[in-house]
Length: 110
Image (cartoon, rainbow, N blue to C red; front, side, top):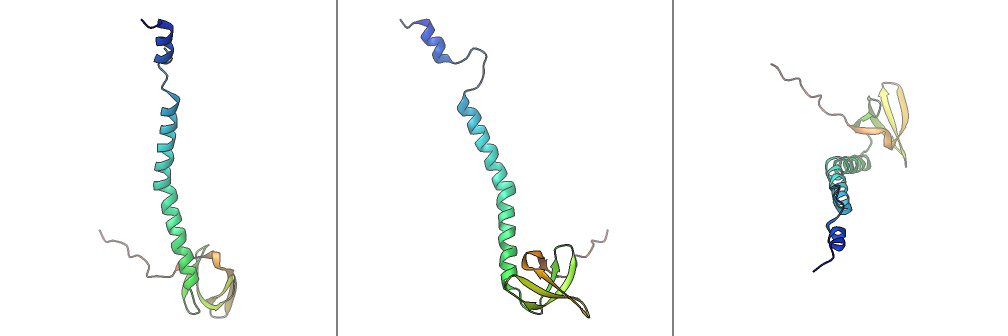
């Protein structure tokens, strides 16, 4: 017959705490959910924007990060020359471009 002290030691703590590996599995599951819900879509969006910036050329109409509309008139290594008014040109970093100008979304009529 087995010693009762050994059986108690194998049974775990009497207070009912879950084993340590269960906490690790739960933390891994939470990280996995965050990865697929938050991190993966952000990476995908960033990759699309980087590809867009690489393909921009003179004449493209863009939106610069604070919401300024302009037209690219010159391309440099790490910057664009952007015309924002008839006689106003500014030099902006390529990373400041947030997208192409498109048709503004129309409001749905109720």
